[in-house]
Length: 391
View 1 (cartoon, one colour):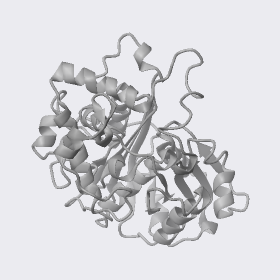
View 2: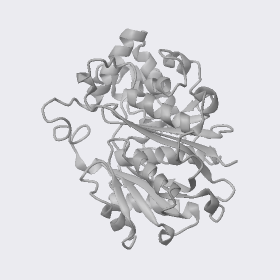
View 3: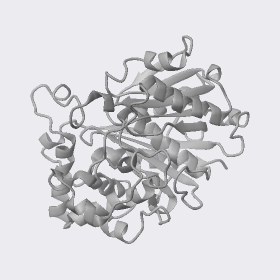
View 4: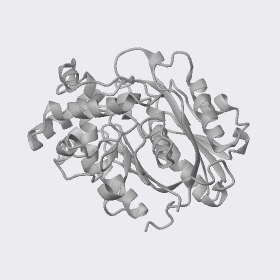
């Protein structure tokens, strides 16, 4: 047991997200309103019931400070904090909101995230020439992760077809989700023949850029029965975060066949949630599939399978939506894209609704325990959240 942890001290009573995609019809404030209003309605509250809020935003052009959320919702001077922790920004917002509620400082808190990327133009994620180390060069995101793919090909004998199966699975799941950016299945042949981005990662090995927002309402379990989900509120079993170097390619001992941040965050999350056999105890997981290689390594680092065996387990159906451990039944980042500040909150929203039996896409059968995994930077930061049904 983790001393003074948050296990079973926080309940999710409302969750929603906007439609993800090229949202040229709305700005970031309107996307936040779409997601937050949906979460308020889901919880049966109004914005006036919120005591404090945390907002995940990565890019400065999406918004600076808590005023981004205040300008969207008009929270009338209530405490709002912007969190930024690379791609884990949204889940870190949720983590901080959980601490606020678990400590007793607040009765009801809002955790949300948003990113507005598509209006910026250009190719790939902005800012790679601005952020990072002042002297060491920073490669593009595909270049970062292609190093892991190449090394795993060498160490484990994995192939490009192994990567393609991840994309096929996730796009197959995403076609059923009404709020996904991409809702069309693809074939192995399409994935294999797609244009190369960073060898061996092709177009279908990379998640897209998107706009989006997601929001969650949390409270203490002793108050949860006063709200709309009195009978099926979801308990937070753990939330952990681990941070390593932003330049792992300058780290002499790093071998590119695993992500230490995920391994450490998972270790801490499992300890607090009292999970001893993740493969048997975790019914579904929304994991960070920014690239197909990332999902395969995540499945190993989260201990859903043995090291080097993820492609074999995928091929055998272990990670299908109706398999032993469903991985990305929503379609993941491959289907939603990655509006950075929002992704962690979207993942938690997906897991929440799965555990309540009301998934908007494919419903995982009889899901009782779920995990959300958010990996940021150059596999530098990992936030892992475990949720469970109420007893």
